[in-house]
Amino acid sequence: MTRIRLTALALAALTAAAAHAQSDKIKVGLMLPYTGTYAALGTAIENGFKLYVEEQGGKLGGKTIEYFRVDDESDPSKAVENANKLVKRDNVDVLVGTVHSGVAMAMAKVAKDNNTLLIVPNAGADAITGPLCSPNIFRSSFSNWQPAYAMGLVAAERQKHKTAVTITWKYAAGDESVKGFKEGFESKGGKVLKELNVPFPNVEFQALLTEIAATKPEAVYAFFAGGGAVKFVKDYAAAGLKDKIPLYGPGFLTDGTLEAQGAAASGMLTTLHYGDDIATQKNKQFRLAYAKTYKLQPDVYAVQGYDAAQLLAAGIKAAAGDLTKRDAVVKGMEQAKLDSPRGAMTLSKAHNPVQDVYLRQVDGQSNKAISVAVKQLADPARGCKM
Ligand code: PHB
Image 1 (cartoon, rainbow, N blue to C red):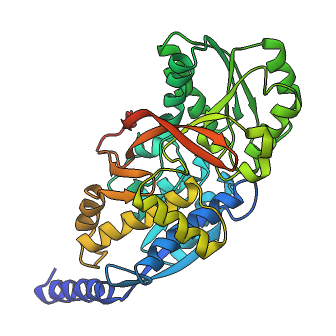
Image 2 (cartoon, rainbow, N blue to C red):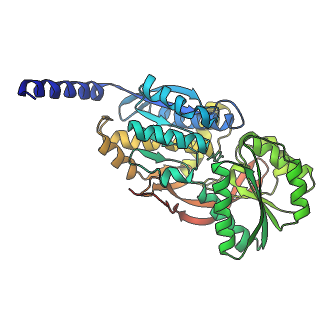
């Protein structure tokens, strides 16, 4: 190659980088469910994200945030195409999404292939911070293992149950949640008698509730969320099981759902990295601001969206607003110590939150944190080489 051509190439690259660096906007691609059983979760995540950005005057690290949105419908078969709309068509600087583990795994692959920054504000797929872990992939929520494993310990040690039946939607999140519960429960001498499933997002539970009644376990562990969680908890009570066999789950079973579940959820114990009444300044301020802005009570999904924005802000600031400085962005995010409404939060080497998992109890319309089930629990990040 001639010297002149080299110089021309170098110049072109420099100009492109400068154009990016000088852009006063950062494009955020929100890929979330806005329809279906997880619709309310997608909205809460978007609300939380935007609340943090608005608290900073609409800018992060001096850059105006511009939004692009896609409804992923919690449909894994459309996930690659949907992610590409944001990455290739809209040319976003960062992808934020999603709720459903199957969709999120496809997003992680697209993010890897295109070296796009991805922040996962819910989906717990263990693989995302396991075998699929990558410098450009971060999570502001949890791994499916985290709350599930904690509930397994609580069911065996605190509640002294010896046997349990599990029930879930048959897909990655449900499978991994059950696996995490079983690991915790059986490590303390419990025994899972049966693992029951329904296809996602099916809510025909009657036959399986009959099977639970016939099996007579000491406890039931269920993974459902959103609209499905409302229906399951109500059906469980209506089947007359609530007072016979205590129902446990990760906190998704009762988060953002209490108004619709009513008395069917009262007194339920769940484990999660958030509780409504956490008595920090940050949580009080967050809950007030969220309620005032959206005329809705926040939930764990809103918290995770808010923290996704906080995490991004840490990266942008570390790179002085220049997202082309990827190493600086990544380092800033890796080293972030977030003042989250959930409490202090840092990231593991695999980019998954290290966080307290609370034991919560439903009290009226509130998931009250009654103790810390496991302090500063880190996902084991099995299979992550980074
Ligand atoms: C998931 O698919 O990873 C998932 C969905 C909803 C939740 C939690 C996890 O509430």
